[in-house]
Length: 94
Image (cartoon, rainbow, N blue to C red; front, top):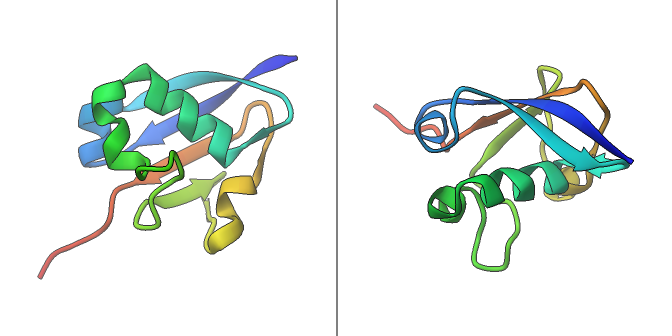
């Protein structure tokens, strides 16, 4: 079964992938499957969101339904139809 999740991208990711995306993924879905689908949508931007092994970069900030998903297991965090995933690049500044 395939369903849709909503993805919001911010800062540099917005430039690469667009502001708001409707991403179709196989159910059951995870943060990993959503991010990999986004990377397929723009292979030129994939290296900024995925590392050389195809995993989500540790520096990428992920929220699911406005709740930050921290830690090593965040790629396996379940995503359900209609959920909103937000992706932020690393924050820097002074």
